[in-house]
Every structure is written in structure tokens, then in C-alpha cells.
Image (cartoon, rainbow, N blue to C red):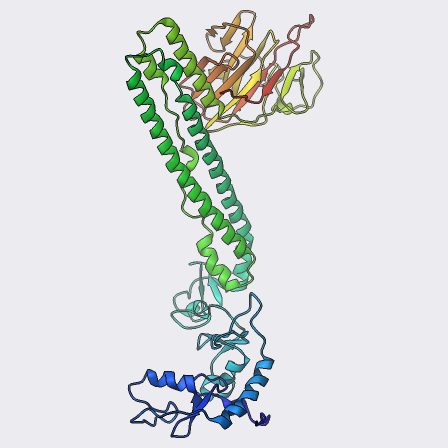
Length: 533
């Protein structure tokens, strides 16, 4: 077998169609050589068989035979070239567009051909006169995306006015008066913004997960509230109508919730995907790809504003009262109890975790380390001046405030002979004794020797059937509602309606004085909600 003549170049063994070293070379009657596959495919696409080099036509397609000598000489030459090539094994490597089968690593990209070439297939650009004029660059993937569609030039600059990548010719025409910077410079700017955008997307995901849980909890609560079997035993005439009413309302609530759940889950999925895309983009060092992709990723995918969306559980109390107004008094009492229990369960789902703020506590007050308890310490301590601190009234605010939506908290008042609690607006007077009313910024209930009352002008006396153990406070900021509940008896105490809130509201606790006889020494305790079925 003939050996490769090292004085010959690859040109002597290259097919003029595929530009690669011959594979099964055949000769045409006019004396030119081609790979069998290349010339066969070329003729299959022609009306008449002709030579691709000299254009000589053949009336009948020639019967081609492998040129044995040329094949033997090309084989070792091909092996010697392939030994110099490196397979495209790195994940970030750009493959050769001309290689068939296993792609080799490209060494250059042509900005005229819009193709990348390995060392072997780059050879014509180093040899053929017209190809030598082509602009070569370091290997780049997606070459067509990197070229200006209008000027067919490399996108090397970034227009800050229109936020698009442009070529040098663009800056002399359509973008002549626009500020432009190199891709790398804009890449650095956008990279610094990426972390903020990703954090915003994560925040949106968390908000939607919270809303998703809220809706699912409402559905579960609605299902529990729909169980009125005990009352239905007492009703015969209206039984079928009541059952149908409950079924339809529950079905409507569940359907509404299921639709919202699907929408939330879809938004969470879209946002999660966006987060993944942002993380992936943050690791790229490809300036052009980064900037081209950044524009489509900088804004979160279209989502709904979920802050005002909620699923309201169906209310059965009012309808049942109207339907059963002829039943015995004991049945009415059971209905009232059931409805109030359901109402308490509904508001308890808006529980918030609040802790007392020592910077607001009147100097006599002692707070626990966890900020959950407060009692009168009898002695007024000398503390640093703080504009937030109560100096006269024996009160303390929480660290947390609320400016929208709904919130609920519970305070244990067990073993106390005097106390006050509720909510107060941020701008209340903290340095003098004032009449505590909604007009002065307080929505509170107080317990003293004369009983339980809502502080107003005049005060509203409230019924007290038994000693209070724990009081629940519910606020609907947007509806202007403040409600108080006897948690142990699971009954509603009082609601202030039609309130106007225009600034942050703070939960407020007033443990009242601890007298010399030791009365009222127990603390007020912010307690976690313990819902019962």
C-alpha cells in the first residue's frame, strides 16, 4: 500500500464538493476526482449529469468506479490529519458545522459563511483566494443570531436607547444619535441587575405560595363549616332545601378555589422556570447571548395581582336563621353557637405572629425576653428618651404594624382584674393622658371592676357571661372592621364597623396597674392560635 507523501498538501486529496479528504474517491471521464457519495448526490439533484469542476456534460450518467490508487494514498493522509484534531467533548465547545458523524471542535468561525470550521475544514479559507477575504473570528455558537440582519455584520455594540444589540454600521445609520457601548460593558451592567430581578421573582413565588395555602385552607374550612348534620336532624320541613343550598354554595366555593389554585400553581411554575433561566443566565460569560436574552427575562412573566384575591367561605348562618325562625328557642341558640364558632375559625386563619416592642413600653412595664408577655413592674424605671415610648399610659405596642389586608391575634387575660387591648394607629399621642376612643386613634376593649366595655365616647358596655380567659382581635383594614372574640366560649363580643384607617395599625396591650395588695399581677400574654375542629 502506498504511504502518504508528506510533501503533498491536503489539497491533493480533497474533494472539491465536500472539501474534505477523499472518501471512496471516484474519477469522472473528464479526469476529475470526487467522493462517491458527493458526486452521486450532486448528480441526483441535477437534470443532466455534469462535472462540478469543468461543467462537462454527460448524455448518460457515467458508471463510476473507486480510484484504488487515490483511495490508498488518501487513507493514511486522512488518518494523519484526524490525529491532530480534538473531538468536541467540552460542553461549551463550538462544533464544526461541516463535520458529519462525530463533530470535531471548531477552531474558527467565518462571519461571511455563518459557519464554524474545524482545522481540516478551515483549510479552504486559508488556501482559496476568494475565501481568504472572509472575516474569521474565534469559534462562536449560533452565528446567524450574532449577525446584524440588516448589515450582515457582527453584533458588537449595545444601543442603550432602544436596548438592542447593534453592529458598527447601525451606529452610522438608524442608531446614529443613540448612545452605544461595547457588549462587555452593558453585560456588566445587566449582570448587576440580575440578582435583584431573581430576588423579585423569588418573592413573587413566595407570595403566591402563601396565597395558595390560604385558598386551600379556606376550602378545608368551608368543608368543615358545611357539616350541619346535627341541626338538620331537628329540621324536617326545610331539610331538602337546606341541603341543596349548602351543596351549591360549597360547590361554588370549591370550584372558585380550584380554579384559583390551578392559576396560582401555573404562575408558580412559570416563575420557577423564570428563576431557573435567570440563574442559568447569571452563569454565562457570553456577553451577546446574555444581553439578547436579558431583555426577554428582565420582566417577570405575566401574572395576576393576588393581593386582593380571596375565596370567601360560604355563609350558612343567616339563611338558616331565616329558615328556622319558627323552631324552638334552643334550636336558635344552637344555630347561633355554630355560626359564631365558624366565624371564629374563619378569622383565626388570619393569625399573625407579633411581639412586643420594648422601645414603646411605658417605663413601669416589664416585658418577657421573647416579647410575648407584659405586666406592671410597680416601679417606673429610668430609661432613655424615645419618641415612640408611652410616658403616661400603661401601654405597649408590638414591633409589627399592618397597613392593609386582615390580621388576627389572641391575648390571654386569665387571672387579671384589669386590662385593655386592641389596635392603635401609629400617630397616637404617647406622652399624655387622653380619652381613649377611635377618634383619638384607639380601637380597644377594657376590663375593670364595672365590667367589660369598648372604649368610645361614650363607652359601649358589653355583656359578659363568664370570666374571660382569652380574647381574640380581628382587623379587616380595607373594610374598616375591628372585632373582638371570647376565644374559650367561641363567641363574638363586639365589632367596631365603618372605621377609617389611613395609617399603620399596631396591636396594643395595656396590663393595667398592679396594686399594693398584689391584685392584677398576672401578665397579658400573646398566645398562639389553637383552632379546634
